[in-house]
Structure formats: structure tokens, C-alpha cells
Image (tube, rainbow, N blue to C red; front, side, top):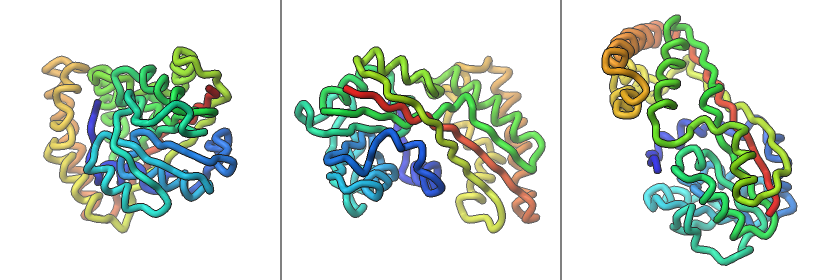
Length: 265
């Protein structure tokens, strides 16, 4: 399973669900008594569940460092545990949910089967469709390069990071009856005034550090010559980003679609 840092989770989930929670309607949050958030990480989504319900909300994650951050949030409990071996009895919760977890698991159906075991009613997943991410940028080359790198990563990574609405089939495989699927679009903006993260992110593009962290996966999706070519183009693009930030002209919008799939045990 892929692992993530606290800063990555905070930045990629920042503002998510603040604009609208309509896509969560099938979860019937205000009618829940016991909710489990599996793979809760730092508790970004767990917080949303607690705010939208009067339920007892529990977050579980295998990463105890991330879990310690979630434990500091008001209104939630935390438990260390694995998504495929949940430390709870049958029917312990009436809603079991995860956000951006299945795309990082080698066997997502096994996790869904565990969700069904510990839920007495509903199971829900919030999974990104990374094949449908849209990017718009004031740096002309950025959108096309982002798409090329994203496609190569999807080809090379060991898990299916573009599950999208195919989660419905996994629900059926796990013995769940699909209630429905709703799509939520998470929009992330980079624009003046820039913060420290914006500046560091631009610098990583200019040096190629951002790509280097995923080199093994990218090389499986590209041949060696293509990887080196993409890396050169990426660094050049990054230098343009850095310059535009210095000039106060850089703007980037990224839209990530998430599919909220709900099923009944």
C-alpha cells in the first residue's frame, strides 16, 4: 500500500467538502449512530463525517503517525488497524466509509468485504478518478505535461489509481447491493498571493524532484528515453512556473473528480 505524509494529505484535501456535501446524500449522515472511516489518515474526511452527523465517529488507519494527528480532532475516536483486517466485531457500525483508500490498495475487494463484515447497513467509498483530472495553467506546457506524467504513472503504479465509477463492480464482487453513485469535483487553485507550499512546489518542478520521487513507477509507464525527455521538459516547465510566481502571474486550476459509491450490506 502507498503511504502519504501529513503535509500531502492536508494540501490535497484542503477545502474538500467545504463547498458542497450534496454528493454525500446517500450516506444519510444525519441518521447514523456509528460511523467508521477506514484509512482515515490525518482525519480530514473523518472531521466532515463528525460535523455532518450526531453519530459516534471512529477513524482507523495503519499509520500511527497520521493517526496521532487525527486523534487531536474534536468529536472523533481513533483506532490503529489494517483495512483488510479491521479490529471490530460483525455489525459494529451502521456506516463504514473510506476516502481515497481503494485506489491505493492491491486488493480493494478484500477491503470492501471487511467493510461489509463490520457494517450492519451501509458501505460507502469516495474514490478519485485520476484518469479524468483536469488542469489549466498560465504556463502553456503544464497541462499537457501533467497529463502525460499522470498517464505514465497510472500505467506504472501497482494499484488502480483511476477506479472512478468502476467501484460499482467491486461492490458487487464484495456482495454489496449498490445504492448509487454521485460525483464530486474537488477544485484546487494556485494563485496570488502564493504561500510557502506554492513556492516549494514550483521549485520541485524546476529541479525535477517531484518526478524523481515517482521515478520507478514512471519508468514502468515510459521507456528510458521517454522518461529522460519528459523530465527535461518538466524541469523547463518548472522554471517557467518559478518565473511566473516571481512576477505574480502564475495561476493553476486542478479539478479532481471523486465518485461517491454507496452500497447496502
